[in-house]
Length: 268
Image 1 (tube, one colour):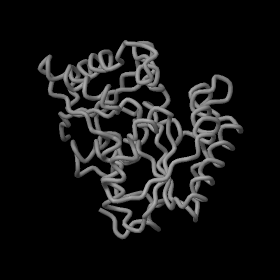
Image 2 (cartoon, rainbow, N blue to C red):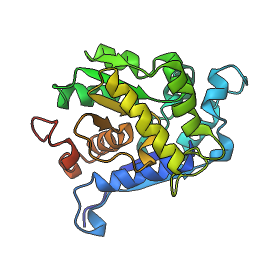
Image 3 (tube, one colour):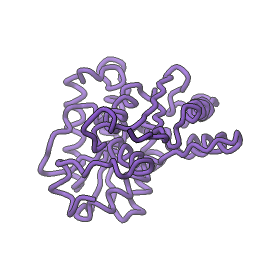
């Protein structure tokens, strides 16, 4: 039996369901037919240790979540993780991610973070040449910092975002609302959350989007991500899962899923 000595790390807890979802997508994107052909994965979910990323980015606290996140990444490295994914788009803000990297460098740790947002832009540029205009759904912090807009524009896409009311009332509230939001209720997702997201996607299609990036890792948890003929829904967590496998066990990477088949010229 082949020994797999590289562990894939997942820094979860932001929210917890998103970390579990990334592990599930790692399994889905692995070309395996038996238990032993699957890949070693370590997930650490410590939600109580990581403050909300948006509160730090909006100046509501001086405590940078990067410090706790770097500590958890060091724990992942201690169990063999050579690369790690962070299933939280907002955590990729430079004010957080750069400090994580500085902390890892300062303490002599070599675990490598695979940048989910940059991977998404590169994946779309390589595999979706027919897409011209991309809409994004995300938290307000991600919108304000242009975390998806900047790399997508650099990749050659036109980018559209929702109007302010849609951003705040339909997208951000659907993520954070403590009654019906995705962080409060993921299984099952509430009807109100599903309705809000479908409305937001329709709004972006009306603004010219022929692809929509689900730029919060809770968004793909909503079962509104069904096949649509008018727009391609892009899941950065799925792309991150593929990148983590590519960087550790490329021979185990499964061909692209069928839902990309109508939009992708060829399978890698």
